[in-house]
Image 1 (cartoon, helix red, strand yellow):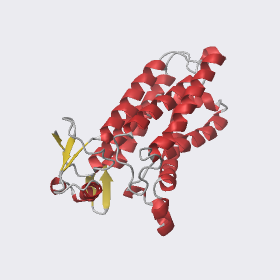
Image 2 (cartoon, one colour):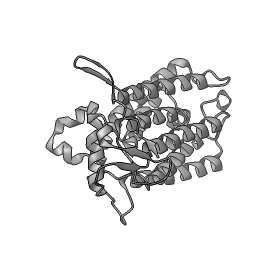
Image 3 (cartoon, one colour):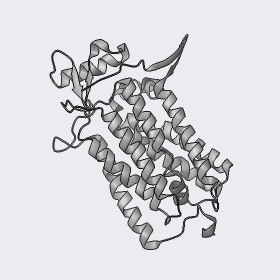
Length: 290
């Protein structure tokens, strides 16, 4: 098995100011999305201008941050909100939901589409291949933080996590897992589900969508394919991921909150792809559609 490399979650400390890997990966996510969007906008026949991409990413970033935080509070941390309403503002303490961020992005891009006079489906199609690398980066930050671990395992690619060798901010999560699985002495052998998600939901989804959208596709198809791919990968990894302690399994002693939230994505993705190919409407993201 692989020894977990205990990395300080704080990259740089400057007095009271701390720059964390988690925050840095969000910057990386937005930067890559912007760069990839500009590359696509520069392709011959694109109806997008560089300034359009700048605004697209700005709206998307607001949607990710606000939706991700609010979604996490509603889906996973509502009890804490009741006891401490101001905790919703302390993003630096962690707690972001992908599904909440997705809803936030959709709502933000609806406003962007109206402002730009574009169809929302075209905006979402253009956006679909852009977040994959960012998703991978953020999942790597989850790995650095020592959070969102998978279940105990003896597979050779599992990780050995010893609280005695961890940064203080990582120790509490490891100890909680030991208590949940009655492991004593507390040395974990677990799936690195953060990296599984980063590779599947991030890099693999990016590769699929980037290649798929390299040429014009029917309107609604890229967005549908993103929802389907992410939903399937997330649903699958949840079988190995330890569910949140305050939620546990919600149905049948195996269904997690992540699977419940991903199921509508899978259904919506399939429906959108079927509609896209039946209608076969040209995308508004290429000049040929005008």
